[in-house]
Image (cartoon, rainbow, N blue to C red):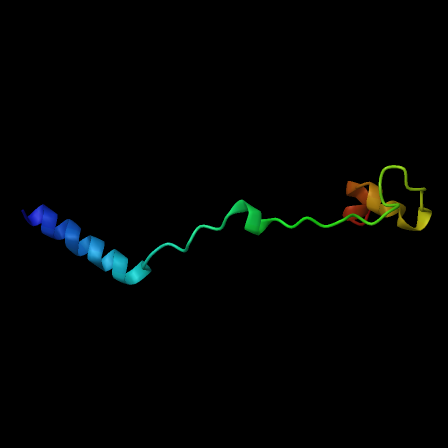
Length: 64
């Protein structure tokens, strides 16, 4: 009997402290579809000024 009272007291204390979980967010509400800008795909011409965005180099990242 005391175990049930202890559990009920612990449950009540936890409920008072943390309350309820927030409502679930649907996946459809978390995503957004946006039309891509034309000319930015794989067939886009090479731009040397923005070439640094196409690769990652650890030596450059470390400033070596």
